Image (cartoon, rainbow, N blue to C red; front, side, top):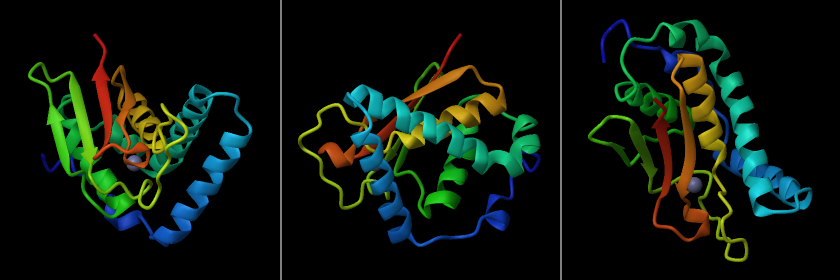
Length: 168
Ligand SMILES: [Zn+2]
């Protein structure tokens, strides 16, 4: 990452208890579940919430992100750093496709899904909020891209995977 591209996230982010975050997230999810009529609706609402969360998280960095150097694939390093600052851990793996238009972020110990096991709601994307945050960052950075959740530990997958696709 170039010096120009560096963003001093760590200097400006204060910490909050993980238990508090997880409990609040769980109650938010419960509320959304109880006010939705389908799994698709739950996923959509949680992703929309993530988008707004992303906008809030990015408020202080907006100008610098807009000017951020690098192409789509290179920007994955910025997202890795942002994830570390906000979750306390790095993605387990970042996989960039050969054409550099698809990036898969994987976390084998997703803090949102930790301790959560849901077996009666197939298709639920428990930590899809992260995808919404990605969408907000992409929009701000000026990339025409969209993200979706590909796998989710809370639903029994080995890892949580959020995929970002750059549109033409
Ligand atoms: Zn997860």
